[in-house]
Image (cartoon, rainbow, N blue to C red):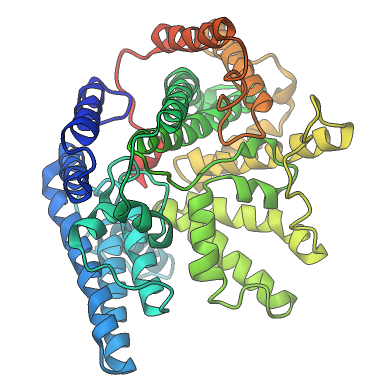
Length: 483
């Protein structure tokens, strides 16, 4: 079930009606409804993997209790590592087994050993990386005694499987979400209206920007050997806005949907393409994953407490793991390594926390220096996106080689170029609205709410018109569902 589908258009209003008008202020009934709705939502993808989600939930729920009741540190550690190994084991089998098997066979072939390793013909369970990380953070926090284990199974299960975030995040923390699940929720009209605005903007990002950019990005990347360097640059830009519109659009819809149910999820995007350096970009892109790796990997490895070489090592580790988290392909690992290399000059020089405030805060335009920094950072990010999108590392290298050839000065040409001009205008409009609202949680949170009613509703109507006008004929899954 996609957020941008007719199924969800029927599903969510029904849940909303039952949640606020039938079970009302009965907290446990509300939570049970959320759990049932979440499991139904997930079963719509593939009901067989619902049992894997349930098993993971039960495992971590009982692990938390058993660690708390353990009579000594030895048993506490046994329960802790049992959960960690099983969770990562499932993730490894479903997501990474074939990658390791094929990589090992290929490596051995280089030294003269030819073997046929068994590969698995299995489907990757949607959202497994996200709900696995929910459970891991909970188990680690209980083990470190940062939180008490949750003894109400329904409340814990809602934390793991809450349907707005179940299949593509944000990656929540028990300290943030569980207290909201356990607290009586009263309908807040201001919060609900804010949620509807965020859903509207998320749908615009996904349907109008991401899905239309995807048409041209796919055409150019899939036939890159037939196009000039300038056309490949255009294809890279289309993909950059596709993946941003797609993933941040999903996050906006997820956060807006949760707000309609009286729950605040973690912010996942903060206008990353307006970043002035790579460090700022990673404070603004997929925030829940970046902070997860910071808290549960970077800091335990020593963080920034040691010398410069420890900082460099730890930084490379989290970027490489972050790349590998995205998928079992060397392209993602190279993508992570490239971002680590981008980050190194800032880390070594101690300038990785220079740009903490919003760019051009309180001003209409950035100054020349800020503009140059944004262009450079965006360019480096787009270069890395080529590896993220390419079929393999060889494809990425050939793509980049053609960009840095004489053909880069040619006029871009590809089938559908005239239609692409319309999409370029839509992206320009989109980025202008994002820039105007960059100091808020999402672009249209306050930008038009303080205008007079005619201006405000005219803008909303225009967005709805664009969504209807440019909606693809087929439902397009969100990119991050594959991760």
